[in-house]
Amino acid sequence: MAITTFANLTRKSLSLPSLSYHHNQHQEFYPTNKLSFTITTRRINFSSTSYFHTFTCPPLITIKASSFSFRPPAAGGGGGGAGDGGGDSNNGDDEDGGDREKNKKEALMALAEAGRSLESVPNDLATAIEGGKLPGSIVKRYFELEKSAVFRWLLGFGGFKERLLADDLFLTKVGIECGVGIFTKTAAELEKRKENFRKELDFVFADVVMAIIADFMLVWLPAPTVSLRPPLKVSAGPLATFFYGCPENAFQVALAGTSFSLLQRMGAIVRNGAKLFAVGTGASLVGTGITNALINARKVVDKSFAGEAEDVPILSTSVAYGVYMAVSSNLRYQILAGIIEQRILEPLLHQHKLILSAICFAVRTGNTFLGSLMWVDYARWTGIQKIRE
Figure 1 (spheres, rainbow, N blue to C red):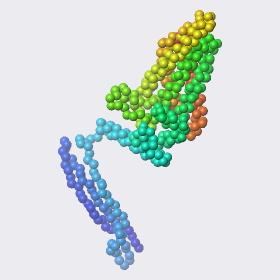
Figure 2 (cartoon, rainbow, N blue to C red):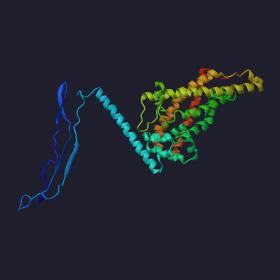
Figure 3 (cartoon, rainbow, N blue to C red):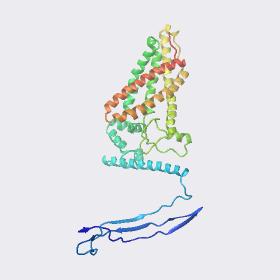
Figure 4 (cartoon, one colour):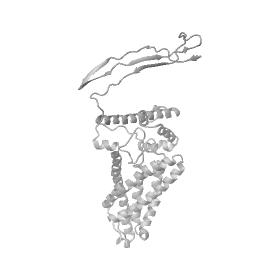
């Protein structure tokens, strides 16, 4: 009968570390050398006639530790306070670094599957891949978009590329806002003005013109993006640096390897609000200019209209519309793009693009109609548009 046991423990290489002493308020020591050893087991056979046989069989198990080392404690001893905080910060950096490394591997694998190289994609995309800023899914989406002649042309523009890579339904949403917006805004004007709709056609036309000009920017600014921008110049001021790091949408989902602080998300609201104020003011200048031209033309044709019609105040109307865009439109569209679409609808229906497009159509149509109703009330409340009897 054969029994297996440990018969021989050989120290093939056993080196005891030398001790090193350091003085820091009190004496402490720790090993500075590595400990290396080997444990070898052999088989022993027992029988009725002999108790031991010579060890002629080869080793069964060998356990070798060749790089076991002791790490000294931090100077000064103790743990807590600032030291712990620094550890947490390093863990966060390590996690971001791990995400970026994972992104890079996924992206390079997507390139290999498509039979492409880094040299075959645009420089900004290649730089983002090498920096681990893009997961493999974004790279695959780029190759899918490239198959369409229209998308391939739009991908040549940085702003479109960043938005299309983040949301392949971006153009659909632009079409909804700028196409359907004409009808929904006209319907909202009719609902609010009722019997005065015909008398206030000049106001209606101006509102629709302003809305169409602004609609594109209302989709463009809060749309989620994939950041492909080059690093900011070192000479940039602190304010520019802060807003450069803000997302396009306060509620935007950050890709793996990136993150946004609460202050940066609030900065997205302020930055987009400032841009929409400029867009709204400019659009209103165009709209009110057209309105005044129509009023004056009608006065020439219809003498009775000259007494009841007045020129629209261009400056006050433009500023009021800019404020409306910066506050009401800015918040509504950021919530729509960041929460309703990206965080709710997209995760639920990302495999059903047709259904997702239909629901986005309904939601954006309702939001456009609501915005038109609110604008008429706001214009009357501020006194820039008066009810004509």
